[in-house]
Length: 517
Image 1 (cartoon, helix red, strand yellow):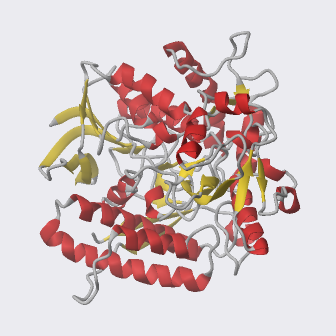
Image 2: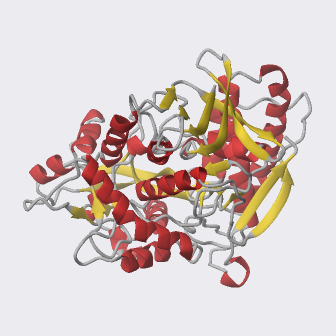
């Protein structure tokens, strides 16, 4: 297939970009599963924008930078908070069904580490509503072709320029899309960890194929663990939105006591990294799990405001309005990714990235709640503008760049890992709390697994499950190496052997370029 533009992914960043790109040429969208299955659709909490009377872009920027723990790129934050209200207003104009107050104005919620109420919701299914809206505009568009069940496998690079991508269908049939410019909008990589809020498709494919093509990645040690995920044996892991705590929900221990203020001045509304670690410490102190409760809130309000969460709890045999709901952290969001400038350009000419797969530095070491949908919206639109402009190199922020070889062949004795092997290793060794011995073990094992996968790829290159394992192991290796390299604790990255932030040596971002695939 040929197109003027290729978009890989069908979440908020890819769809918003496609709508702009279709004004200038023919667009091909590759989506690896059902086109409506993406992290966007699973985003319950909301989309943050400084539209309230007591709010401003400056205040939104201040909160974002505080959450980012010293590593946010100020120019990226400025773009996000200044352009965010305009693009959110565009969604409202297009018909987004955000919650409204009695006077018809958007009802704004408050979430952790926000200083004011600035989060728009569509009950507790905001991402699903935005995805629905964007799909109604994309579907049937005469200049947009959507290819379902198409797993992008590699980028095509000729003379140092990306000219498209290869893919395989659900039946392992190969395909090629040639395009003038290509956008990675493949979302996150939560499935790299055994415990995650992300859907099964979030395996880090975009990061993996970009790395194999020689593009730079950055900040991958910073993985956000969402603190409140339903933790009932036999029930699926299910995100319990931060908006619950924004409306007054409390974390309690096994004795029914609120405990967050023992660890953090901001209590239940501290940033996600702080809440996750406090939960781990309280659970270790008491020897028992922690829970979330809304029993002190009006049950009618809770059921009306959080119908999806109410249903998920009921399915697990719990009453959200009365019971203490067992919760624990789970991998939620990757702050790092394919390094880009403010217009989505990567270090590889012709390749762009936007949304969770990309790394502009806007989130620093820890993302502020409900900035993710805003990021996809704003930087998806900006990437489209960059793709329509004349071809030019990326203007990347200054950072240390480490050169490395992806992986070498391994001995025949090295067993090929399963997806579970990789995910279990990542959860046990590179989770909420990290330390050198387990990080070193993880890096060594992942190095060996990447080598074993490379050997197997020679004869099974089109196998979709092998591609899935390859993405998980490749991204896991990058996260593990970055976590071992950063000998401090900052934001979502916490090491027991280096428990303090070290601005003297580590107030910097590290980019990595891999060779030798």
